[in-house]
Length: 101
Image (cartoon, rainbow, N blue to C red; front, side, top):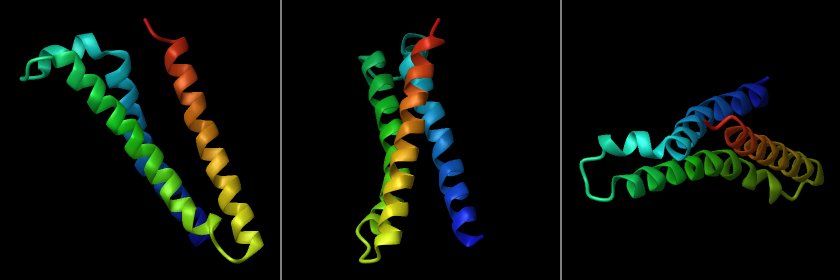
């Protein structure tokens, strides 16, 4: 149960970062007016990429200790969870591109 709650908590923590990151990437022109620096669109894109990278690192970094474990079963679960989470991230990228206005 602890492992399930930990995984769910990590994913729930990362999902808003992915959402905000994709929001920055798909609405950069609309958001650029809110940036008080020159080159507003650049900063919106940079922030979007950073948010997505943070979400991916939260998901992946948690799995790395399991992937490097000496126990083959723990290694297999770490690898499985990493690929599952990367697949979900890929699906999110795909969907954000499909429903873009």
